[in-house]
Length: 475
Image 1 (cartoon, rainbow, N blue to C red):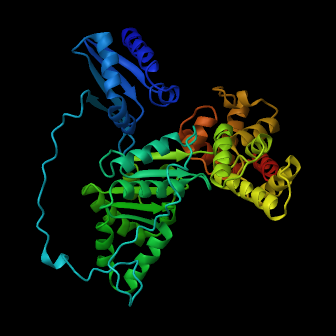
Image 2: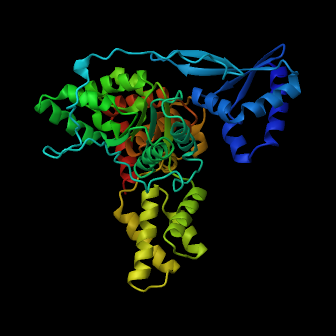
Image 3: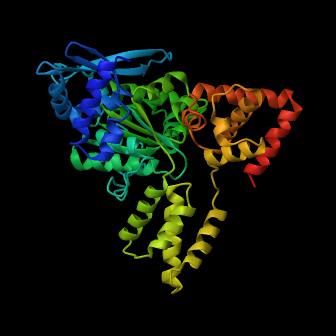
């Protein structure tokens, strides 16, 4: 890397750091890398187009001032973005400040054939026999951004959701795909985006629907020979939010109809928001043409909340319910329920119910009884950290050795087993598993899983490893 570029960027960062909140600096400026300096033009690399647009929208003035201080009045900043095309090839995308002087796309008039202007268009949400032309959004107003607490585990997804809500269809993150395990807030965030858009743009047609209900409606339209009406109805929506899109797996008819709807909405500047329990790269039995479209925008992962975020969630829940609880109880619950937000809120509700209905004082003893029952009765998701510890202990090595770069056969096999079990027992994406187990990429994890599957069939000793470790993980 050019040392001069690095020096200039470090001085810019010093100025920026003094003028914004520490958390904003950490999120939006620490990941940036200086690449090169040519005359008065500094090139920096940012992780994604979403990142670039966020900087442009929120920090362009600050960046200009910082750069002008270092390089003079004619200073220019060039963004370099590493983007993957559908064939997995990397290509750089560059954009110069100021970028908001690009000419607007000229408006176009479309001649719509009269036969398509059907006044009797079928609405799949209407029960036969009841006349109703209004489209209900199906949104839950209780799910808002205000009660979706921000933490390191959800910052990117929440920021992207807010950006979409501010400018639906007008950003590069279209579609926005939010993915993560059970109970981490995917549905909450999807509703929050819709609710915020309805507040800001009352004239826009926003529709939230589960992938399962969408599929049922499609099947019904095929039975009644109204497939074209079904497609036409969904093409009228301004903001389409589909929850649990992994439900489309293996349903070729539903995927085909959604493909046509998606293309129409995207081409017409309408916003699509999707949620899934898997990253696009991990989705099974979804057509390639659809998967490539899922990757057009931004895929943002929701991870398990860290301890500080869990504390905030518990306190916020208590505050909203008008209940006070000792600090030690709050800390105990947050410390012992780590898996997801839904479990955390469920435990607090149980604690409040026990104390109010049974007139019991909320003590540490009562909290431990409820947490123990709650955790026992809830299907617990094994964490990647726990898997690494169990596998390392089994092979009598420490976790640092398992994560190291060494190519020694027994360590490589232990690492591959950890990746295999992480894919099997957690909802984490392949990329997330790789980054947590020695900073590998998703392709390494995929290779590890295939290797373990092959060895399980050909090597009796290796099969024994799998069975014994699996037993330890499921105790």
